Image (cartoon, rainbow, N blue to C red; front, side):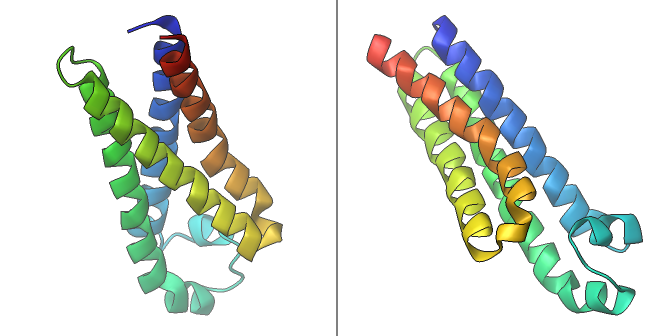
Length: 134
């Protein structure tokens, strides 16, 4: 694996960690006021209303993280490198698109969208550069 692919993989790994953290907040720790307030909810009542949706959304995030992680594992294989590249780019691209939907649907959540979308977009850029330079 060349240096560009390694840098891209590091960013994809960071993106997977971010999405795992989001999963933990949305699906495991949602009942804590410090968590649901971070998502812009003002009251416990609002948090309870949103809880089923947050729980479900958390699993979307963990599935993206698993896809990215599996892609990275396959990238480390000499025989499955191409599959790892495809899966890593697909998972990271899904993360970027989810961040795009977030910012488009709620501009006040731009900071959250940047947090969830920046690492995967940088990872994709480096992986694509690796292919082009390759």
